[in-house]
Amino acid sequence: MRLAHRLLAVLLVLFLAMHLGTHLSGLAGQDVHGAVQETLRRAYRHPMVEPLLLLSVAAQAALGAALALRRRRRTPQTLSGGYLALFLAMHVAAVLAARWQGIETDLAFAAAGLHAPAPWPVLFAAYYGLAVVALFVHLSVPLSRRHPRAGRGVLAAGAGVSAVLIALLAGLVTPLNIPPALVAAFP
Image 1 (cartoon, rainbow, N blue to C red):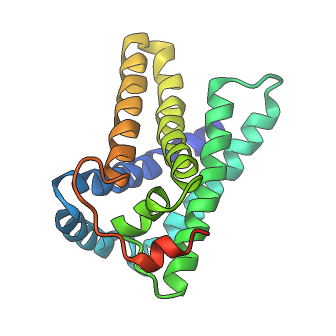
Image 2 (image 1 turned 60 degrees about the vertical axis):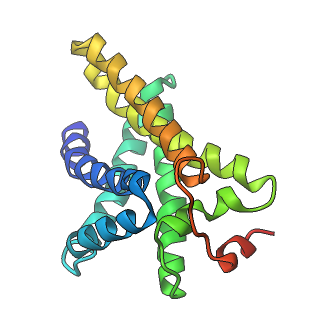
């Protein structure tokens, strides 16, 4: 089980690096983000790729849950993995539901909750921020066993990426054009 979890992790880390990289390309502006996203979507939304990617996420969550249940105590690894599984379930469901409704799932879609009335900005900052931190914590734990300094570097990078991503989505780095209909979805 552990080997399967690690092998799937390689595939998912590659996708998540592309996904976070796509979001971070928004630092150069919403148009740049859109161009990068459109290019990468050709690969990961391909009819042969997307179902495998979604199955990989589900399998990874199931394997992670099985591994966590075998442990007697909760560790940073199990806690971060649990949050990642919860986040990915909600995130994937929200994106697929929006796509089914014909809503574009671009940078504006991701940022809408941070531009809605209170308490949504705080909730979405925590939702996204903790997901990014959890990902980097989850990756740093096995690395830290052999290379403690590298593990700490991964944690620091995760905190930095999380902060930059939240600032970007909040419109603090570059102005964002958020369609009013997306913001209106938050009461």
